[in-house]
Amino acid sequence: MSPSGCSLEEVWEYINGLERLGWRLGLERVTQLVEALGSPHKAYRTIHVVGTNGKSSTTRFISALLERRGHRVGAYVSPHLVSLAERQMVDSVPSTDEEFCALVDRIRPIVDELEKTFPPEEHLTQFEVLTAAAFLYFKEKECDVAVMEAGLGGRLDATSVISSEVQVVTTIGLEHTELLGDTLSAILKEKAAVVPQNGRVVAGLLDPEVKAELKDICASRDADCHFLGDEFVVLSDTHADSFDIFGLHGCYTDLHLKVLGSYQRANAAVAVAAVELFTGEELEADAVRGALGSTVVPGRLEIISTQPLCIFDGSHNPPGMEETMRSLEQILERRRLIAVVSILRDKDAEGMVRLLAPCCDIIFATQSSSPRALTADELAGIITGLGKGPEVFIDPDPRSAMVSAYRLATSNQVVLVTGSLTLISDLKRGIN
Image (cartoon, rainbow, N blue to C red):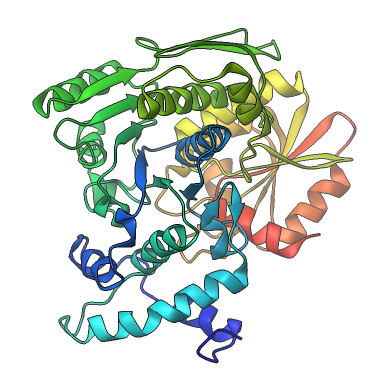
């Protein structure tokens, strides 16, 4: 039971009943909420992470690096895979369901009182309430630093009420175009809005035009900007186990990652540069090795079983799928895939399938629990519409589709579950 007497089930029902997006984007509602909670986000220093892909991984790497320096670190990531409580972590440990529900139950009366002052059609969104809860959780856990991953865009994202000391831009791609704009330039402007006057920015690999525009944005705000490939670099052979990072203040050699995927080396380098910028000095080399070598990122090229080999990967846009396919080619050495796939309706399903299908012998088109998911039939139509390719089976039940993939997999085939983090979430909840 929570302190007010509500059961965990009642608190979950309340959270799930909150609006997901709201009738308009803006910071007014969440600003009022955090002020009513005593502005807990001002109790610690912050780093803000925005971008299209790589945000959660980079946030987790930054947290681990700061922990090795003796900080007590809050980290806020999204989306979750099994429980909403996963979104807020202290020293890389998620809050428990009981802690999370008790926290939300305490915030709920404040939310109710605030909403009485709103227009009838306006309500605090789920993400706004969750973000405020994370701010309060980090304060009560006596964190001295919090690494905040933006949920959507940046300019109007609930996390943007913070005054961050370092701003991280991981990558920029076409996603959420109906809300953020349908060009890379428009999306960059939304995300780079988190850069304040005199900001300090670290950026990952960007298209040349996007990179030039970010430089201009930073110059207009007298913000320092450091780019992967320029001021800091990754030195690696994609087929080698180790790699090196030449950072802003130091060189770190013989690095190994626990997470799979060559693209994670870029995320790690961005994290190292962000922490160097935050601290203003070279990091201790063994601490860097330990932090990067111990960080896990659930749902990103995550090995679920070895017989057969089954990998969960939440790639949900073409750039992410391209990186996944490139990494699997290096990891699996020409082994073929049996894929279990669900894709949301507002994603570029055709672009993703074009990258995935050539590596597959069989694709199971399925449907996640998201109301935005393509039906299994619709997805199968997109796959077969691309012409000659893998054999396609339709199974709307993700668990049934995965069981069938397991049964069909030979020793030379790998089961890949991909296309949507909601699909990964559904299966993680439903399988042992």
